[in-house]
Length: 528
Image 1 (tube, rainbow, N blue to C red):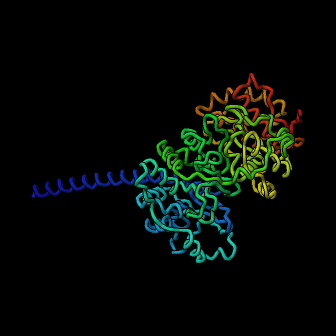
Image 2 (cartoon, rainbow, N blue to C red; image 1 turned 90 degrees about the vertical axis):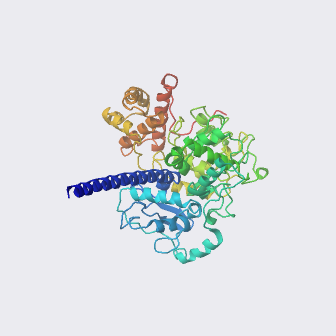
Image 3 (tube, rainbow, N blue to C red; image 1 turned 60 degrees about the horizontal axis):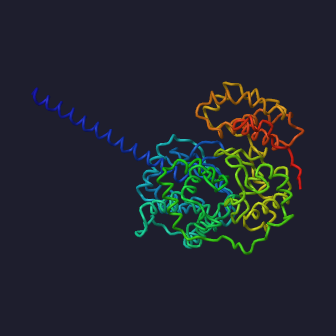
């Protein structure tokens, strides 16, 4: 009897050990699946469209401006009432692969299922596992604003018949493994054509004008085919890869990423492996080079008294230089800048109106367009896109500037909330050093000495914060303590905050050489 009990106990112990080991192995496998899913979700930049203005990651309610109206994105967290909590893996795969919702209705192609259909079932399984592992957030989806007849989802069958074919990515047997990996990312999870195709409404079809560049949400996504002038043909592989990783290219390729591309780099591309970035570049090299516009049809601007020249000399030349070459490592060149020469002028106009934060070692750009007329912005946009050897179409629709002015809202333009300090160590250092209090009620001539006193302490306290972090963090802090006061009532706010940002950059980089440098509140007089 004792022997039987002993055997039973031993068997139970053995079974328990085996069960425990199996559980550990299963949990380990689950964690590996979730980790892989996190990487794939990052590659798809899902957080960009599924994080609303309240900042709840993956909880939806981000408004997508589409040709058929404003579409509010859904909640991807596993909340059972408002998210994916009661979605099965098969239901999720059908939405991802076929564009069909849990209730059997057609999904709007604002969700890029025309690209995601190329993702393998195993990868969709990993994505599902990761999303189900998130903290549930109860966030009911707000109503979209889609007018009739587009709000009738059954009408989408026409679009699907014409422009959508379901099917996973098929590797090209004649291409290398690297090129096929790049194709899988570009054509699938990366859904690059969603922005960079010429014709957005036709999805990932043969009519899309593949990767030739086009307008998306008020910005121009440039041509990324191997065309030498309008695309990436004249860029080296290293330059393209570095740009995708950081938003700026080394060597003789000027410019920094702005708008949605900047967000894509920060949230997605910068976090991909070097091997995957190289694979994407290798795939793009295999695509057919396209001319988005004909250079021979352009208006000539390389002439004396060219339209926009006086505006450029007044507002832009002090930083970007009269020859458009900028300052190496500090101010991006406009001459030879392929982003500037895109088929559409939207990105240039948006940057002129909204400014740019400091990034990749470059100084922040003030929102100079806030002090310019629409006609001046149109003129200078045409000028920089067609001078110093640049070639791009002139603006035909003058309303493009007024539309951009109505839509662009940034801290530097003065028409949006002050940004948060992005780096946690820097935010803590700003608090412990009392920096915010020291930035209150500063006369513009006091910017230099006060920043000289602040910067050494701040750099010492904020371990790991980059120069970009410090410039942007100081500018955001200055905004927070100064914007809603009357202290700068006698000067345009966009000029005040632009001046502060540039002084912060110059004092951080080279105070002994640029201690007196300030951005003027208005246009600088032409010397010609």
